[in-house]
Length: 258
Image (tube, one colour):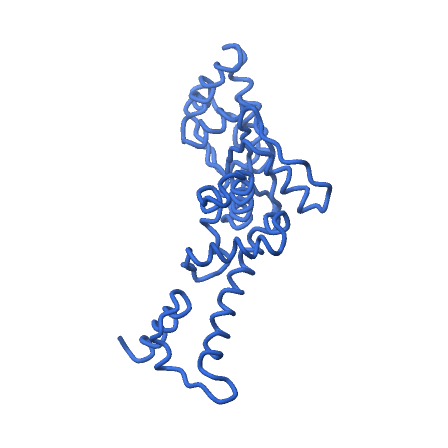
């Protein structure tokens, strides 16, 4: 390892694991002793990661408050090194951390809220793709409809929650009165996507949830119609499937029809 490489390695190990190898490369002064000089960088590293978590999970930060969120951040940083070139992606395992750590596991709403916020950020960051319009369906024969497959915008995500994390998130972000934490009798699926540089989300009913899962998995429109037979009469299923398809296209969620 080169001299510069060794210094960089030792400095990283000091920041991440408090090893002492870096002391051989740093000179202290009477005014700024070596421990103080090193602590400046160490404190700055942890402060920057805490700021990254606050930026990536603003609603969770507000819900917990400065003291409790700072404690959460310190615990997470101590067990999760920064693995990305950009701190934008720091916190990718925070939802799992909240779901499994004994201190936070009894409050599953926290993990749900973290998962929601992380996914909303992914929706915002997703690659661009041009949506199709309803004209992409015109002129197709019945056979073509049956074998048709859909390509969805990269921002499309579906999440399932038992707790009302999305409603709490929206209230916090909007500065509105926050609803009380509540759990549903049955988990609710939520659709998230981006269109024209704006993020959208809404809950899904059982029929659309099944239709969307079928289409996202790459199955044909004919398969989607067959799935709809579990929710509608057989003669109604194609029309209901087409209604969902039109809604997805008009929402900017479909980028290809093949």
